[in-house]
Length: 281
Image 1 (cartoon, rainbow, N blue to C red):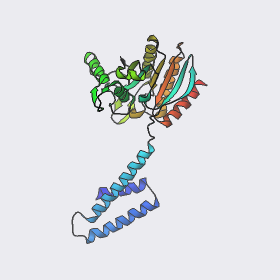
Image 2: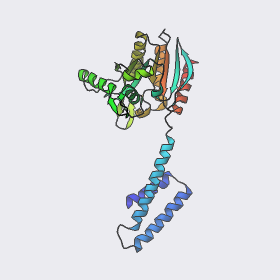
Image 3: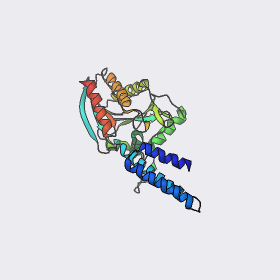
Image 4: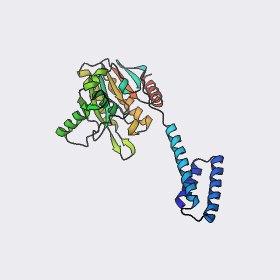
């Protein structure tokens, strides 16, 4: 009962609306009367507080979900920010709708566990694009996961250093025009807290990926904003680190490349475009 009372008090403190306070006060008064006149167990107040807690919990969860901007599926390529001889674009939308981009970089954790094949991360969606399915849409061959697991057999199970990159074939993702995939160890899980990442690892990843693109005579590359999404890194911190690194490397690159920086949410694209504008004007 004490826990339920505390829950009610906390809910009033969190959602201090006059109507909610009035409803809860009436419920508490009614429950107290019932406790003294009721002969059955549990007391009636138990059900009142339980119901109130469920309602408030559901309402709070609903509010929290409303605060999270939705993922954008349809692709929008914004801007054409010139850095040296290259052009940089904001890529907003799902990687599954990609077209005419040669190299895709994925963001992986230090265990090199690819994103879930039904998940929403770049890693998971590229994994799905590379896989094969039967007529019933059942998974037949998980090519990228098998490739990485075979690589681990020769190079250890991890954890791996941030900044390390592994190149794989596109497998069935070639249907979208992808010619090469760079699996980049960009973040380290932090037990439910924002992931750990460092600037030196980001520099290694971007330098390696752009060098790979040039050496293979490819002309375009997709690089996600490292740490966003499941990494839960602060948006501005993640965008600044990615944009600053790409700019610094392109400033020293004479080749004419198209670089697409990927995000999934509209708010992230606004912040990314703002930072690109700031860095290129």
